[in-house]
Length: 128
Image 1 (cartoon, one colour):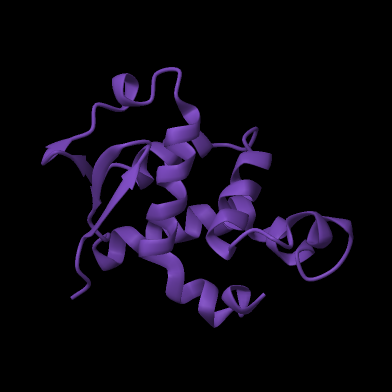
Image 2 (cartoon, rainbow, N blue to C red; image 1 turned 90 degrees about the vertical axis):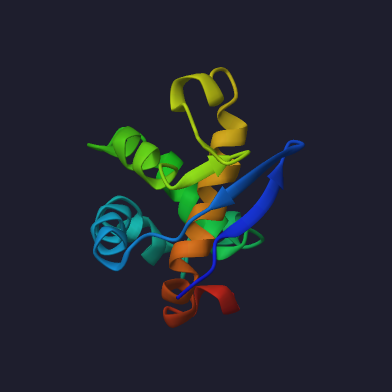
């Protein structure tokens, strides 16, 4: 069983609970559908150079943001942070991230790292 991860973002403490296996697979399918085609370009071409100095989870989120016009991206982002608490309380998404999308994206990066770090290792992305 993987432990929750506590972290600080912009002076606030958050706790990320890893997803249950099935829910994690559902979100992984959605995430890879959105970023999968772009991830392939990281292994060659102009985009690879442009994203080379980001960590693999940050790359995934960067590609997610680039594909914001895709179906269901907003829902996926909301689902990804649904397991996060602040000061022991569930997040109120619309209030917590109102006019602070930078904090939201930082948190999404951390959620991706906690839940899918092993997937990126499998693909060799963490070694890049």
